[in-house]
Image: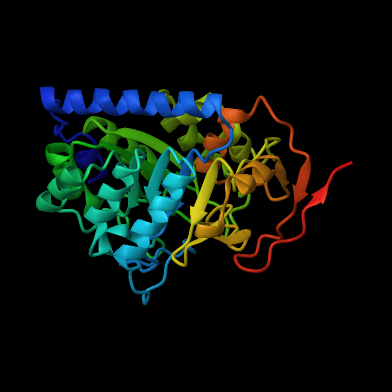
Length: 352
């Protein structure tokens, strides 16, 4: 079955309209990177959670529940406006499962109204042609779907068997960029599934990346021999991936810590369903400040704050955003969150 899926002939049809949309999106992205290089005083990317509830329950995931109500649309729009006030260039909706939010289209439209690039991370289960068309009209720029295996199992239901029909719909209807992320590690039973998923994504005309599933606190979990072999093969298929511009994932695969300047809390913000600013999904509680109270001064302070959790971190989106500034501004403050999801932030200690 895996062979049948991977070699299916479907591919994305690049009409003149889609090419124009893609070219315009690329220009906006280049402009956002240029602005980030010129000014370090604003966030480049924020992940915002409109609801914690998810329709799945993957065993490795600590970012969902099955009971939460969606954040009211008026409050979501206010939070997005606050991110706009800070000058955030890219706002990505995550969860939980964002497609469960009844006003998702309005959320996306509000992101675009701020001038930001609008992204979404979804499990893809709820996609249908009419839903994809609504996302087009709302102005979605990017969608990422993580597919963990070829056949569903007790670890994850995000399988290619279930989602392949959704991918065909996206290839036919989506005007936005689609990235399919495969994974190794974290209890995934068949590492070779990642190769099948990546090949299928590329055959459909999507981009493809591969990630390493972190442990429960977002920390280092090195790959085994078979996992490493698959990871290398997928990386060779996806040489255009931005993640190839740095050695972050390479060190993780080898079980080694990274020496880097984490700009979480500055270049990257994670906004939970309660409207609080956190370093990332795995360090909820730090700094734990309401978004409405988060100022440019906070952004500038966190830009210069070394995070004690950074060496063994596996959160690639934070690293890739931080990589914009890897060459400048040595960090002169220290903050060492212990890896807990919640709690009061530790005191900043200036390094002499």
